[in-house]
Length: 344
Ligand code: KG4
Ligand code: ZN
Image 1 (cartoon, rainbow, N blue to C red):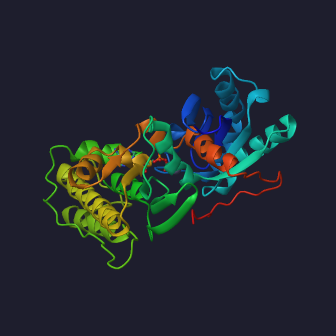
Image 2: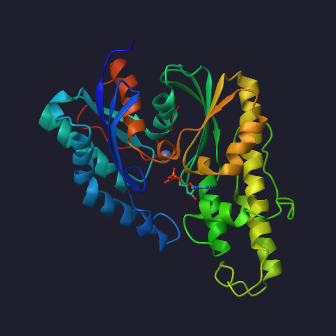
């Protein structure tokens, strides 16, 4: 039995302001997430300045809701875990300053957490009695990240690869914008792809043989070129709603290309490194085609946490905080955020 802990997690790396109380790295006593998605929709993507201002406006209330929902006061916490990076600098600072202030005021240890590591620890929040099996292969696919990470043991990682250009979710968002489908693009593309033919357009797959990296820029350009051919008067890179484009086929063919590469490379890596289990996390893991393709093709167990634990949340930060706390990590109150912090 692991030592009992109660950790407050704080997350503000991108466009979600979140706080949570987690016991023993597994049991969620509260998890509050304030999403800014509506604020960013007008820009068709995350606008950093808007994000940090929105974090400042709601962080105090999000943290106090997390504590009151869990019915705990600061005195019954063991530590405060906060996302230190990677993420938007101006956004990270808001969560970090909140955590530092509380840690100082209440005399609690401060633990800086890598956001990507935390995505992996979301698996412990859904693990029941069954311990996840090492080595565990994690694919973290969101609007900001496409990372393939081998978790060899607790707190021990090997970064296999990641995107060289756009993150997978970013590619969904950009193609949705091109097709005038709205933001966030992932769910819009997924809905538009229903009834479409995924083989209608033979879009390129960047396999980048010999590496575990990904690239979506060639695919993005190929879709743009196709739309330009179908709509020569394309304005400002956004298709005109009045032009009769084969949206369903374009969306389905684009989605198939992304899913093919994500699943294909992840499963090859699982084979090569003898992974006992696969974890798919991040907003893009909501994609049903991605989930079903993984489940159909993987030889080892695939875990996809429920969507509220796949998208950015603070329960995963607190869960990672538990293991770092047990390992003895205590950070100084003058630590800085690390916007480009790699997991390994
Ligand atoms: O993890 P997440 O909520 O947060 C950030 O990255 O900030 O991921 C959001 C990303 C967006 O790019 C969104 O378009 C994508 O995840 N996404 C999806 C789906 N739902 C969300 N992509 C593909 N299919 C989906 N169903
Ligand atoms: Zn994330």
